[in-house]
Every structure is written in C-alpha cells, then in structure tokens.
Length: 297
Image (tube, rainbow, N blue to C red; front, side):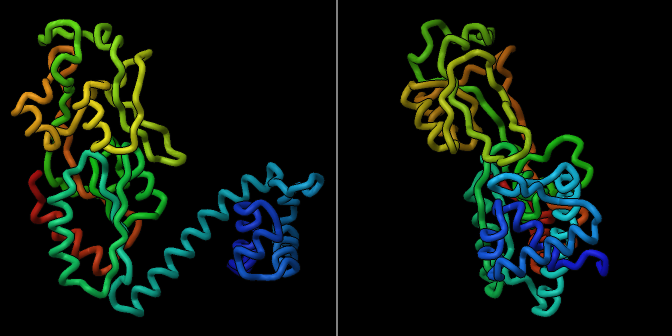
C-alpha cells in the first residue's frame, strides 16, 4: 500500500460518502485542509482528477467512479484485517453479528443462542431481523457473521449448515372468498383479492417477489406477524410459514387454499456464512453448535 496510503483512501471515500470535504472532515474528526490535501495527493498518485469540482458540490468523475469501487474493496479488506488483529489480541470476538430471516422460527433459534451466549459472556450479540433478500445482503456486505435463512440457489461462496424445513402455505380467512375453495383455485380468481406480502429489507440487492400475482392489489407489510393479523381479519390473503398458522388452521380461523396452482413450498432453513471470511473462535464455536445439532420449528 506504499503507492496508496490508507489515510488518503479513507479521506477520498469519506468525501464520496458524505458529499463534500467539510462533511468528510467532520465524520473523520479531521480538519478540512487535512482531508483536502489527502485527496489532492491521492489524485496526484493516480494521475487523474477523481472529483469534478465545477459545481456547487463535488462529484466523482467517470474515472473517480471506477477508482472508488476499487477503493471500497481495499478499505473493506483493511477493516477485516484490523478486526482480525483485534480478535487475535483479545483471544475472542467482543461482538458477534447474526441475522434471522423472516420465515425462520425465532423461538428455537433464541433458545439455542441463549444457551450458547450464557457460556460466552465476554461476547456481545448483535441480532438483526431481515426479510427476503435482506439477510443475504447483510452477510455479503460483511455486516453479519452468520445468518439463519433460506439458502439462495447457486451461492457457491457460502457455507451452509441445514437446520430445519419450513412449509409455506397459501391461506385465507373464512368467508374471504366469494367462491367455493377447492384444489383448482386459479391465479386469475385470486387476482381479484388483495394479496398481503412482505417488504424486502434489502437496500441495494435485487428485490425478491415470491408467490406474487401480477396485477393484483397488494398490502405490503414489514413482518410476518403483521401479515398474519391482516389475513386473520379478512383484509387480504397470502402465503404464511406453517409454524405460524398451525393453531389458526386447526381451529378454523384460517383455511388453506393450496392446490394445483398454489402448491405452497417446502423451504430449507440453514445457517449460512461466507467461505472467504475467516471465522473468529466464538463464531466458529457457534457454527459448530448449529451444524451439529440443528433445530426443530
């Protein structure tokens, strides 16, 4: 890194992320001249202008956009190395970040985590809940050590530990439909009724749209519990994880409309981690616990 000191790269990245030199200086707790000089020295090393300064706000030149993508990778790698050094000095991680996906049974996961972290009091748990593409995005962005979610097909860069299977069932409340329920209910029939769906929490990944009927009116909600309440009240219909609706199906508060056109699904829930990121000792022990014991919903 002799050609491109990390100090200069961090100043450049901060100007891009915060939209200007003064904002970058405040974020980095440095003076404006320090940040400005660092960026000018970096531009001299690169040999091109990285910022267009002709307007009220600086913006990246085309060359700067290309260079910034590479800088982000370098800084991310440097951050991982710094974290690894801290972990080695401490012996064990001080923080472990996990993400639970929206169709994962929370209770058995929390039970497993409770037992594990009672025996690992020196490590703080950061626990997040994300939907659809959100868990995988957190993992790939380096914001999670392990996620518990369904594994995307063809994700060769991930290591997975199968935990359990979850059934996805299309359901309605009694009296919601104006026609008899049988196994031949068609998408055309259901398009007349509002469909309740989960909002994808991914920030920049391609959004997922499982089981959607094109052109149908939608209720978009942020979590499965709100979705369930909407369906129970007859405000819409939708696909629900089986562990959340067993009781409602048994007492007749919900009715399955699974059939030829709406078969539902069986989805494998896994613990997932990246192969290219070395696991610390605490993360490795938790991974082994999850991999060896699995769980039941």
